[in-house]
Image 1 (spheres, rainbow, N blue to C red):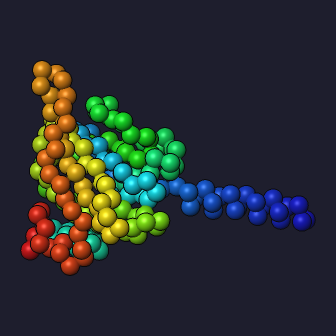
Image 2 (cartoon, rainbow, N blue to C red; image 1 turned 180 degrees about the vertical axis):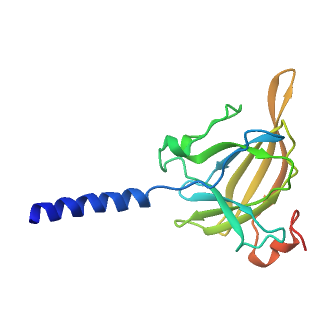
Length: 187
């Protein structure tokens, strides 16, 4: 009887631990209609990064959908979390980036929640950009201070079929009271 008890306990423990180790994605790339390509990159060395979409035009942080999570270069090595659309200038390791299609027919206001329990704690960056159909973008989250981070938005442009990275905008960290004043949010 004790052998069966330990066997069942071991199987249940393994199931619980494997469930805790999985990260569910809530984002599904559009397969048709106007869309752009976007690469999201986590430049934190220790922490993970969640990309959220606001479900509310007023940008309430309590009404969001987590799209996906990115890990540091030495984080999880799971191909299930890694998606590549073959965009140029990709020098990142699999867990720290994800390439997706974004819809371009509707406004998209996003925020990045970076968690680094070692150095900075948590840092949010709110960002909005009128993504254009057929274009390619890189959205890079980088810690810049013990309490802050920034998003660098760049576009991959082509000149004579040669790609070049063009920085478009930098978005600084947000403090919780200032989100309603941000670009893309309804007042």
